[in-house]
Length: 383
Ligand code: P1T
Image (tube, rainbow, N blue to C red):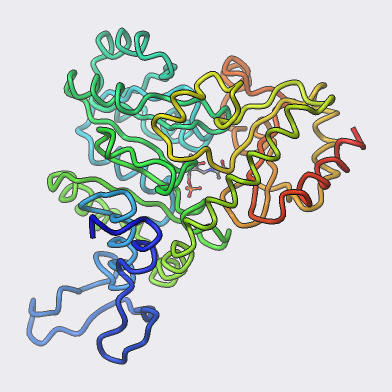
C-alpha cells in the first residue's frame, strides 16, 4: 500500500469488490446490529455505534490517504474535536492557534473550559511559540493550518518538534488542505483532524469528521470515547464519503487551478484592498507553504475596499458563487465570516485577529475558472 500513489489509494484502498456477490462498489451495510451464533460469538461486528463494515472501509481508505495506521470517522468535524477533548485527562492545558474555525473556538471557549484550560496564541512565529510553550506547559497543541479564514500557515514540523520536546501532543486540523495537499503526520504531528464535510466528501451532502494517527494508545482511547459517547457516522453517510473520496485528487487539482487564477485576478482588481492565498508570492508564508504543502488549495480570503455595505452589495450579487456557510464542495461558495461562520467569536477578538466586515472568503469550486471570474466581475460592478 505504501508504494501506491494517492490517486490509486483513494480508488482501491477499502474498495475491494464485495466477496459475496462481486459487486464492484461496496454495499451499504445499513444495519444497526449483527446476529451472533452464541453470546459473544460474532464476526467482529456487534452493534453499529461501535463498528460498521461500510465505516470500516472508509476508515481504511482515509488512513491510507494520511499515511496513518488508524482512522476513526465521526458524525461531524466538531464531534472529532470533542472526542480529542474527552480523551485528555481532566485539567489538561491546550495551546491553540488564535485563528481557528468559529465552531472550534466556541467548543473550546464555551463547552470545555470547565474541564480543560485553553490559551489562544499566534502559532505562525516559531520563536514566539517556543516561549509560549515553555511558559504554558501544554498537554496538547492545536494547530489549524492554513487557518480559517485568514489562511495563516504554521510550521508543522517545527511546532510538532517543540511540542514533543515539551511532552505535548500536536493535533493538526488539515481540513483546508485535505490529505491530497498536506500530510501532517509525515511532518511529526500526532493526530490529524478533518471536517469530512468539506473537501474529503466534496459534494456538500454529508456532515462528518475524521481523526487519523499512528498510536495504538490513542486508538484505544478514541475508540472507548466514540463508543461510550456515540458520535459515530451513519453507514449511508460513510458510503457517500467513500464515494466522494475517490475523486479527491482530481477535484483538488481543479480547485487549485481555479483558485490560482481567481487569486491573481483579485490581486489586480481596483475594488480589492488585499488578497490572501498561499499560492500568491504576496502571502507572508508563501515559502513555508511551498515547503510543507503539495499545493495551495481552493480557499481564498480577500478584503474589499469599503465596509459592511460594500460587502453586502457584493454578496447579494454573486450568482455562481452561492452565499453559504461551509466549503470544499464541487460548487463555489462565498462566506462572510464576521456574520456567518465566525459570528461566535466576540467582535473584539475577531477584529483583533483581522476578521473585519470587509473580509470575504471564497471556496473556489471546480466549475470553469473564467465563468467564476465573470460572476465575481458582475458582483464587483454592483459595489
Ligand atoms: O462542520 P463540521 O463538520 O463539524 O466541521 C467543523 C470544522 C472544523 N475545522 C475546520 C477548519 C472547519 O472549517 C470546520 C467547519 N467549517 C465551516 C462550517 C465553515 O464554513 O468554515
